[in-house]
Image 1 (cartoon, rainbow, N blue to C red):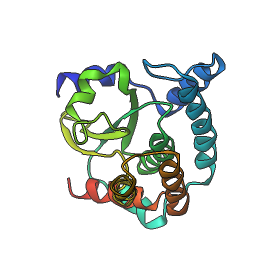
Image 2 (spheres, helix red, strand yellow):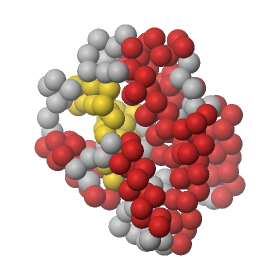
Image 3 (cartoon, rainbow, N blue to C red):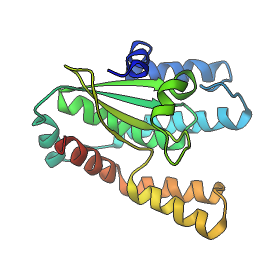
Length: 199
């Protein structure tokens, strides 16, 4: 196993520990990460509400449930995240439900800013985009695949917006959140399951 991956796993959180960490920090008026600002704390608060809602409403389709249960090995899904990240708030509740549904996947979450070495191995266009899901073989500890920071259609939406307007502003972020709302986690399920089946 790559040393940064092993180190990250050693310092990782379960989904419930990650949620508690964010909630506890918010009680102190803080967000996760090295940088602290009113904006980041505001996003973390919004994201906590989002994750609570998605935890209740997100459904794994019957077909996807069967596919997850029929995986032929055991895996660790190591996700790089931060509490203020809008994409992570949309995706982690789905990823968590998929892991639980499978019975063969152990979900672990690490914070980007605390795992610089790991983040550098999984950059997107030279950027520290998150969340990144790293698929680790539970038996051998080897990294098999990665996915993220968002489903392809959502990524395309942002690329197109940036081409047209030159920036990612609040309108772009709102459009992205609306995309997630309409998609109901289906693109994420499909993409991650395809990836797992192709291993």
